[in-house]
Image (cartoon, rainbow, N blue to C red; front, side, top):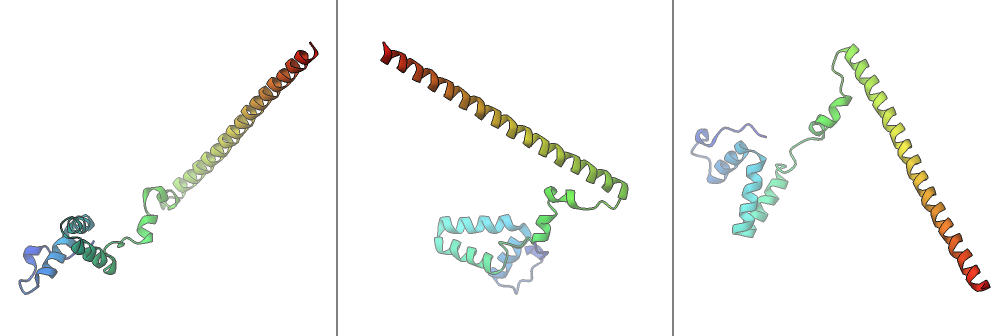
Length: 139
């Protein structure tokens, strides 16, 4: 988000577009999106123009990949600066990964056992049906 001054401190010599841009920048990306949606609702070319301007000025995609990498799901990979804690964290993560692998292997064995039981049941029913049909033919 840009650090442009609030509209009250924007010089009067600036045009209405510059003042509106500064006001929207001050409010954040949500204000830009709301303005674009309202533009589409009231007069679609205005919404389209705002969308084009947001993309052209990079307001739509102003977050860098680095800021996404620092999101909570990636902070586990970052060093805390404390060697003892980092060693503990790495050991805990390694242990959790091992437990996850063991659990996934257990689930795979469970699925295989279930599949085998279902297949054996099918084969038993098929053999029983075949035996009954042979007995009916013999009679």
